[in-house]
Image (cartoon, rainbow, N blue to C red):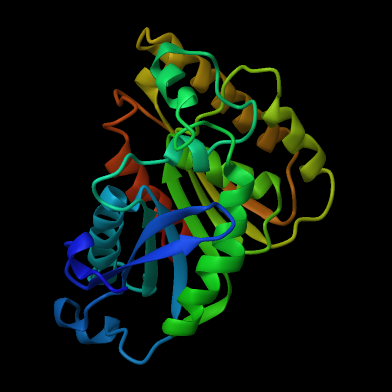
Length: 284
């Protein structure tokens, strides 16, 4: 069922998908650039579009679409490609299940902020495998059957737990994704060291040539909130591992944003991420 009102963004269309894999319903918003807001040279009409999945789409799709449109309209640094942005979220009027779908088993610490989530099957952490299968085998075929898309792979962008899932998709070497934004990824001290697991992945060939952007707000590491500080330590470990395990198929950049928190870092980091992943003029 198409429901444009779910995604009040100009140029976006919304619909719901019942996932057999997850056993739940997802709200999906799809945005593509409108030529009337662009200079003639950037007109995307008739072009196949690169697909990029946007986690936490109910708010992040609006930000990602605005950033993408502005970059396409840039006449000083032209060439940003037309993207088909696919926001993934949950139906209005029900609790969001991001803590379930974006996280791995034994990846979330016992913390007061998450105690209530663990008690509810709709939000209990550990469902990343099922969510990845949903994206690969259920949603992506729908998107490619309905829209003119380019290539067989896609990007995926997200922040916080939305940054945890792209990390895991890369760890699992999903054949669907070749561009990743890991924004303040929620990686914590638990019984399973997921950062260490990445060392094995980087020792062998990757399923796709890959481009990755990793970001963190400086105050996440230094602001005095233990939950964020633990996350920041694992971000540093991840960055150090990528530097130590240089891989010929992986191009990446890490950036810590001075003076920014877990929330204020999102707009500048998403801008830099989209430019790094797709923009022809952004430095490597």
